Length: 67
Image (cartoon, rainbow, N blue to C red; front, side, top):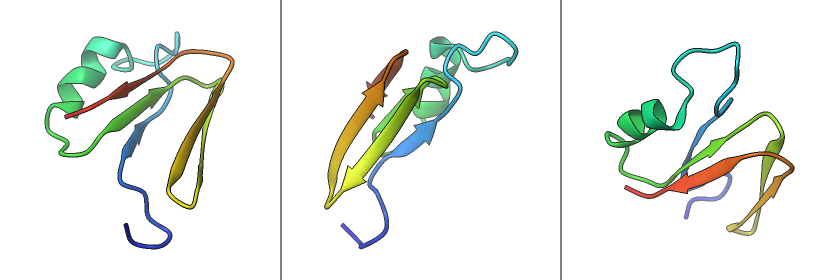
């Protein structure tokens, strides 16, 4: 892994009531074109990466979707 980069993508605002296209079914369609894992996270979730180790901190909903 290259320093300062991560090997996943992020799709924010999972299931946000005021936004279109952020439900899990829509995210799965988007992810189908992405060759790396994707974290779909809501607004109560954060991702912390230290030395390549990923830690999801959440009081809400999130899902890791692998290609």
